[in-house]
Image 1 (cartoon, rainbow, N blue to C red):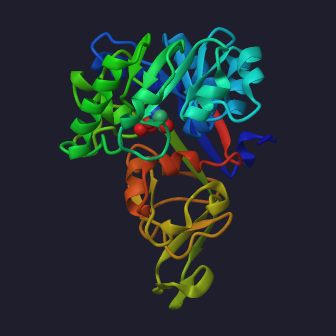
Image 2 (cartoon, rainbow, N blue to C red; image 1 turned 180 degrees about the vertical axis):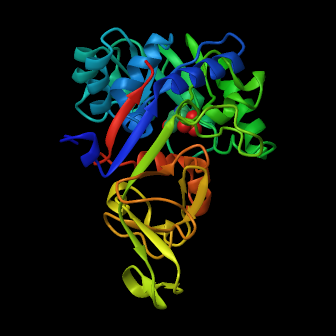
Amino acid sequence: MLLTSIKSAGALLEIDLGAVRANYRTLSKQLNGKPCAAVVKADAYGLGVEPIAKALWEEGARTFFVALIDEAVQLRQILPDADIHVLCGNLPDTEHIFCDQRLTPVLNSLEQVQRWANRGPCNLHIDTGMNRLGIDYQQLDAIPSGLDIDILMSHFVAADEVGHPLNSLQIDRFSHAVSKIEHKRASLSNSAGIYLGDHAHFDLGRPGCALYGINPTPHLESPVLNPVTLKGRIVQVLKIDTPSSVGYGATYNLQAGQKLATIAVGYADGYLRYLSSKGVVYVGDQKAPVVGRVSMDLISIDVTNIDCKEGDLVDVIGKHNTPDLLADLAGTIGYEILTSLSRRYHRVYRGT
Ligand SMILES: *Cc1c(COP(=O)(O)O)cnc(C)c1O
């Protein structure tokens, strides 16, 4: 969003590209020398595909995945020499776009395989248990020979749950496909899969969320850094004189003597309404709970005993309240917190 002055911004979204690059190095190291691709679908999980893709390219990433053809066309403009793969594959009558833009489809069905015919290199997705995308692992015999397969891939259902029985089943089913179908590179592991160990790595890692600071090992301390800070502006400070309530629906009762601050961040900015009376904001290192309902453009926080004034910035997302932590409070996952970050925030990219 166009900014008149830094002081006019309701909220500043700061993204530390250095942290994203450090996360790429951490994941590469975890892969023990196997190459590491980067998944930059959904505008790089909401962080902004242009600066993120450029930073990852500079860090050495060459293979990129997006979900949609149009995301790939956008990425081609950003990275003219990257190896770009489209997870949803060639929708009917889109094959020419792949050829024109030098994109590689992930073929997910025999129909996609048929339409692709012999247009050049492609990827093939084997469904080893998700029942979402891909050719069923029991139908390998139906796959025509003669395809020029670059990446043979599959996707974990529950890699973030160590010991989930599907993890080893999927590795076995995929290994079988790898032995039967000719290909150049085999790829199974998303961020969490990379932490399941060497037997899950095959030839290429395919992380998304961990690049952006989501913990790929939720049962352990996070091996990656959170690059996201969201600073919300205090637009009003209120002292409460008489017992009353705050916000729509009067869902949160106030006592005389409480002090509130109103922050210019709301559900229209992706601050999920489910965080009503659940979210936490930090004023410096002091915790201030969200009180009452999240509204479209505003939240109220309790700052009784916290020194603050109109115009100050508070951490709506930061080192104490990471996307993962907010996700826990909201009953969702960090992915949804990140991909909900709005375009209305003034964005500042730090590091290169
Ligand atoms: C989104 C996606 C990834 C990345 O997953 P993360 O859990 O974000 O690391 C990898 N592979 C496929 C097929 C995906 O759809």
